[in-house]
Image (cartoon, rainbow, N blue to C red):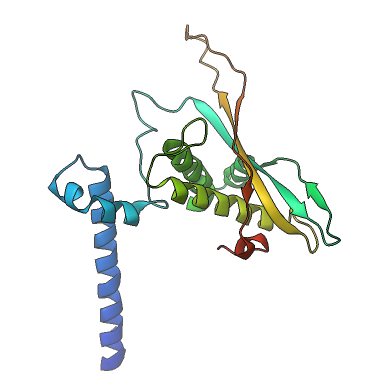
Length: 212
């Protein structure tokens, strides 16, 4: 910075100050989100949730006593309106498998490849019942977030084809239990279980590639 003129030094200093404040605010919000209930979280819980959800949501599912023991695969298919006005339904796209292939052998996989889809599904499943009803205030946000992610993935895969339009999408999650180790006496079914969500209409601003 010493080589910069005083005007640019002031500009750089202000930019660094803004970044430092934003980082401190974010760390504080994440801390309050995972901390036990206290006066601050009771008073400002709504503001904390609006900052955290959906992108920065945290949970403890990696750790004992109940670590995840399942492979969760999020899949999507689409209803396409073709250029000549006909309709067709695509096959199922295994989005989790695509992320897995992108991560495998990658020394520096992106946060998006590792967590975006997985966390979006977790957000949806924790705010909706098995009948896809929600009583949570964040239910609509969870549905919108998941829909936008799968729509963007379908556009990236060019699922609609030339001049096609995504009209509707349907998401399902295939959960496959992980086989217990040979020394374990645990006996579980290894049969995959599918949870199929209703068809969602794609808004016009997303149907041709926008994020909404």
